Amino acid sequence: MSSLQNTAILSMGTLRIAVPQSDIVTVDVVADARPGNSENILCAASLNKPTHQWPVYAFTNKLTPANDLPDSCRFFACMQISDIKFALACDGIELINLTEEVQQQNLPQIMQANETPVLKLIKYQQNLVIQSNANLINRYLESLGANNVEH
Image (cartoon, rainbow, N blue to C red):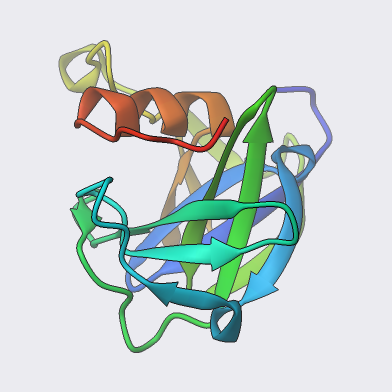
């Protein structure tokens, strides 16, 4: 990441994931969703978009997909990589500028895995935030068995 980047911090319970703001194409409200997607077992809901349905994933505090949307979910951060479209369920979304003053630490070697969506650890307002991006999150979901992702 550059020394100054617009970043969105997605809050999901106590889990916080920082992604480049440019990875988010829209933010939708929870009222636009319908429960689950039986073809994609990791999907918590489907988001109604004008041309098709987007799968919605809800992460637990342990970064594993939940089968249902949490009661605290208010927003969906919609991401698109080429023709792959998906959304993440969020309690809140905060926009910040990730500067050199924000404490960042590379992920320790022992915690690195091929499928991890975590690039770095960030300390922001006394919270631990994991830094990722849409591509890594998509690869992580695929490694867990996400299928029938909208193309």
